[in-house]
Image (tube, rainbow, N blue to C red):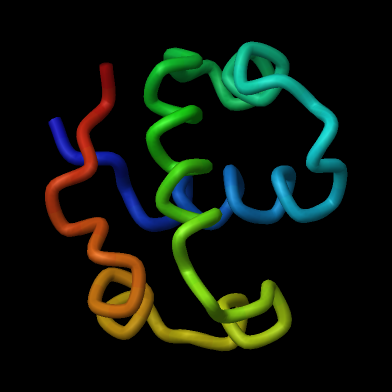
Length: 74
C-alpha cells in the first residue's frame, strides 16, 4: 500500500519541526511503522528544497519533487 501524501506531509512537518525526534516516535504519533518514517526521512534529507518550499507544493508536485510515488507503508 502506498503512503498517502497527507501522511508524507505529516512526517515531513514533524521531521522539520524537531529533527531530533526518532522515527519510532513519529511513527507512534502517526500510527505507522518506524521503517516507513525512516524511508520518508531519508527522502527528505536528499531533497535540496527547504520545508518552506515543500509545504507549498500541491500533491502532484510533492510526489514529483520527492519521488514518492512508490513509497509504501510497511
